[in-house]
Image (cartoon, rainbow, N blue to C red; front, side, top):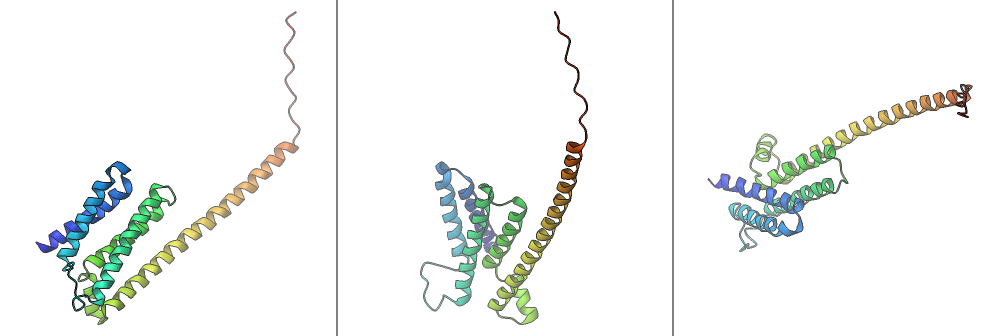
Length: 187
C-alpha cells in the first residue's frame, strides 16, 4: 500500500508540475497547491520528515533529493521550452524521457540501481555515475544522428539550389517567345 501511495504522490507531483507550466495565471495556484501536496506526500512516504537530524540525513538521501529536484526542474524547463516553441517536440521527447527516468531513480532507488549494485558490487553513487554516463552516451549518439541528417539535408538542398540556378540561367539566356499581337482597335 505504501508503494502505491508513493507512486500516486509521484504522479501528483508530475501532473501538478506540468499543470503549473501549462495553465494560465488564474489556475496556477491550484497546480501549485497540488505540487506542494504531492511533494509532501512523496517526502513523508519516503521517510523524510521535517525533523531531520544529522544522523538520519545520509549522503544517499541528499543525492536522491538533489537528483529528484534537478530532474523535475529539467522536465519543467523542457515543457516550457516546447510551449514557447523554442524546442521541437522530437528533441523534447528525449529530455522528457530522461527526466522521467532520473526522477524515477530518485524516488525509487531500490529498483534498477539495486539490481545493478547486486550484479556489479558498486556503491550507489558509482551506479548513478554509470547511469549518467550511459545517458550522455545516448544523447551524444542521438545528436550525432541528427547532425548527420542535417548535413545530408544541407547537401541535398545545395544540389537542388544549383540545379534551379542552372535552370534559371538557361531560361534567362534562351530567346523569349514573341509577344502576342495587340488586340485590334474597335474604331
